[in-house]
Length: 365
Ligand SMILES: Cc1cc2nc3c(=O)[nH]c(=O)nc-3n(C[C@H](O)[C@H](O)[C@H](O)COP(=O)(O)OP(=O)(O)OC[C@H]3O[C@@H](n4cnc5c(N)ncnc54)[C@H](O)[C@@H]3O)c2cc1C
Image: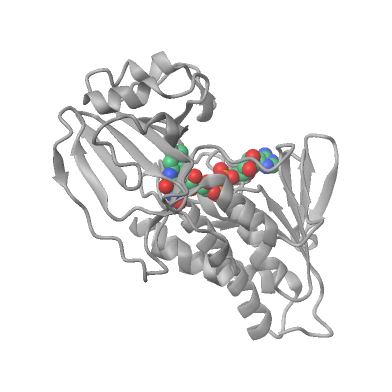
């Protein structure tokens, strides 16, 4: 509830992935808040090709007010095939055009831009790489950036992804481990694939081989999808010594194809049609469930920073957006319910509510 006497909460959100942008939207709808969003990149970036949005994802997008800004392509039916023979192993579940919350594949950039468009103007600062946080007790948190600037916030929301700097401050010993999986992703113009016989481009197909898989899917509502998403993964992949970057590395066609040469001729032809220079590599990292998604009574983790899970659930963006929505509700609740106590006590209560709701969820996964 808005209150004439409520102090303004200064909230610093770190990152403009799905977690940071949805936090900016949900938190800016609260009364008496001053929000800034800090992003290390120079502009809105969206690594990867497509992203699955499932039931929970649509629900939270609806709450954020952008369900109808995103279309995507239904992933029903997803036809499961043998990667070597093309044999259909499972024809999948029929598409239900009346289901608003049906699983769909969406261009990542479409999701990012839809979220970005709902962030009130002027909140985001680019070229702001967080390098340090300092607990100032009742006075908040000092937030320090690489360019030498700093700010003070009452709440810091760490939406800075799998290699979170915010998490490093709360849990310096948290182990982030290579998950022995690598994925490569690209978008191919549909026109380049239309000559391949018996390769439907208006439905999703998932091809399984030994320790590898390939995913082909439209990313916009068929028949409008100009591009087909092509994602492949290998499992049991040994680590590359010295590698510290995990997402978005450019790799050559030959390097990716060398793992899939033995596949069905239709897939081999799809590999041949990938424009050189368009593959990006994603090595998967994961860590154990965190004991606490908050620290110092004023710093909180949302999205991948709070649950590095190798992307295997295909719902990381939805989890990040659910976190953001829940955080906004927890702050709203604490400010309404806790009528005595200092700002820092109210914030501590809000973050504990958030922690109690979200931590068991991630622990169960
Ligand atoms: C191969 C692969 C496939 C996936 N498929 C799906 C899928 O189908 N569906 C799905 O929902 N999810 C999927 N995911 C997971 C999904 O991409 C993530 O869960 C989601 O992007 C997490 O959002 P986030 O905002 O927490 O983090 P991110 O999207 O990683 O965003 C973090 C942001 O913080 C910024 N940042 C980082 N450090 C700093 C710093 N020090 N200072 C300032 N800014 C900083 C980054 O530049 C970035 O903009 C997949 C992931 C992978 C790797």
